[in-house]
Image (tube, rainbow, N blue to C red; front, side, top):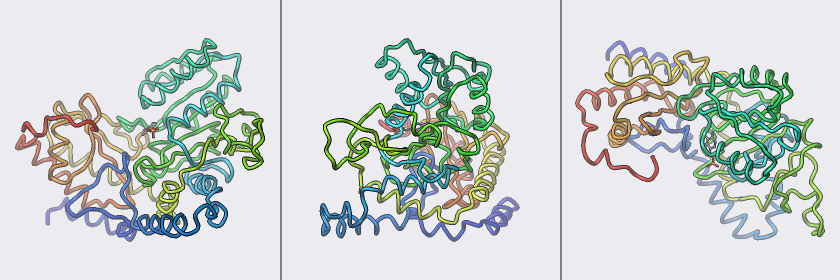
Amino acid sequence: MDAVSAHARTLDEGNPFAARRGRFRLPDGVIYLDGNSLGVLPAAVPERMRQVVETQWGESLIRAWNEHDWIDLPQRVGDRIGALIGAAPGTVTAGDSTSINVFKMLAAALSLRPERKVILSDNGNFPTDLYVAQGLRDLLDKGHELKVVAPQEVEAALDDTVAVMMLTEVDYRTGRLHDMAGLTRKAHAVGALTLWDLAHSAGALPVDLGGAGADFAVGCGYKYLNGGPGAPAFLYVAPEHQPRIAAPLTGWMGHEAPFAFDLDYRPAPGVDKMRVGTPPILSLSALDAALDEFDGVDMAALRAQSVSLSELFIAEVERRCDGLELVSPRDHARRGSQVSFRFEHGYALMQALIDRGVIGDFRAPDVVRFGFTPLYLSHEDVLRACEILEDIVATRSWDQPRFHKRAKVT
Ligand SMILES: *Cc1c(COP(=O)(O)O)cnc(C)c1O
């Protein structure tokens, strides 16, 4: 064993999450560095799904809404996610997609600042957030402007025209981490509200929405939270805003008394008014079971492991591979739980890696992206991935027609 392998093994000996790996179903021969895009299947999920489908749905049928308390599942799952992101009970609800939740939260936030017209965001934001803002701006037709600046220019762009500062905490492409507490404070100083997208934060690093004083937040269930493809998303409304905001999508599940079947809409109190239609019980149940894997997890310890895995990856890739340029911040304090490199033939390189069992993903135009998920990843995995990457780059084995052929999903 060489010195680097010995080092990786030593690091793994101190891994507080080593025992959790067996609670995830990792296919043989796969090193999965894409838990930031679609989390791995937790071993407890299939059994929970079987039980919910066969017993709850199959036998209890409609009675399950009460007998198995399906009706309150969005709040229960919401509170469990809330515990991971510094949100008090009763401030988070699970459901819909992140895109829809951006729409709901942005509309609610804008209605609290009717005299202001600017939505401030940055060009590192995930496109769906910007698309939704553009659609909402056009739908409202009240003269709103979506102002998109470079991430490092957000602070300077904050002034008294800004209604809402809408940012994603961790840049999906580069992994750059915004200072949530600092930017929230500065936004509030000019009277703006904040909407944070936690798609690449929840379950990846410590988040303290309450401590930061964030106004609104949204995030994904299928990335670091491992809720499965298309898992329900979540949204957060700070307690002080709950009585003041109006829901833009006034469906019956956000009504104060859905089963009164009144003809007129009356909002439910609290965050529940942001619910819209019937909750997706099967996928909420899968997400609920997946969240068991975070029970007892100290997010600070998880962050320390994530940093350690990422630092090893960066050091080894830079030592072994020519032509790969780090696009993530080098300072781990300014980085989320992913590392990205630029490579001219990034798409083909990623296909060649996947062919050898190292799964990351590609983001146009030339970025290869790797996520680090300490609950099921070891330093030895990271080292092995670097060895395979080194071999592919050195031999140019990525340069084959089959690796250049673009699929629909990258
Ligand atoms: C992944 C991601 C989304 C995805 O939104 P969906 O509605 O679930 O497709 C939204 N925002 C950010 C920042 C993301 O990274």
